[in-house]
Amino acid sequence: MNRPIGIFDSGLGGLTVARRIIERLPQESISYVGDEAHIPYGEKSPEEIQNFALGITNFLLEQNAKLVIMACNMSSATALRVARAHFPQAPIIGVIEAGARAAAKEASGAPVGVLATTGTVRTLAYTKALGKLRPEITVCEQACPKFVPIVESGRWNSDEAKETVRGYVEPLIKKGCRTLVLGCTHYPFLKDLIAGAAGPEVAIIDPSEETAAEAEEILAEAGMLNPPHAEPVYQYCTSDSPEQFTELGGRFMGNTISNARKITWGKELGAIECRDVTAGQRARSAL
Image (tube, rainbow, N blue to C red; front, side):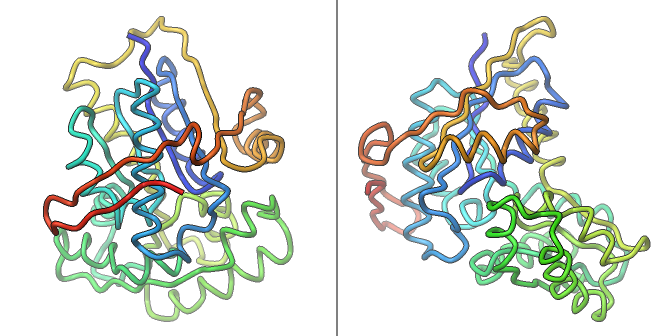
């Protein structure tokens, strides 16, 4: 019964989703992978990101994950469809659809702003997702390439972070945006600064909250939720420094990370062959 929920991201950002899962489903175990060796995903090609995402999804399923969450907007935009086709044995969800649903519920007639990585903005994933739900809403996507390095280095409360946040948020406010979507799971680390720069009249959407709700709904419908008395087990893996992951991740999670371990591409993360059944193109998940 105690199969884990698998969660992965390019680094610490997916811990925002893990934290929401723990708050909402405290009886559930979690297996987390931060691929910090390849951060940031937002600056890489879709083919590279697909390769990374498929390899990590395979690893989590080998850890007996009962559901996998792509807690990375770029992975959700480029690899979710092909991963679902290749791994039909378990539900796989992303964060973009969840974020778009939450924004659609919150938005009035004013434009919706999206703060995201360069790669996610390039895909127009949020514009497309919101367009399906609320075609009358204008979507303004803002690339924020400096955010992930700030978060990964633990400088999310620094003067540099405050100045950087203002530089990305103010153009969206000037365009009339009254709803802002945190279009990268690293960005909730900067949520207070973003809210301060946006002003009290602007709603801030954190897709991790909606993602946790979606995970609960899927597991409940499948009868795979752990009983309330279950003892959860949390496993954290990184493809880079476990010491840094433990220190910075623990600060955000409330010092609950004590067992982070390093996993290596080409060893724990094995090579697989995958065919995109829609496009008929091959993708190899290996380094």
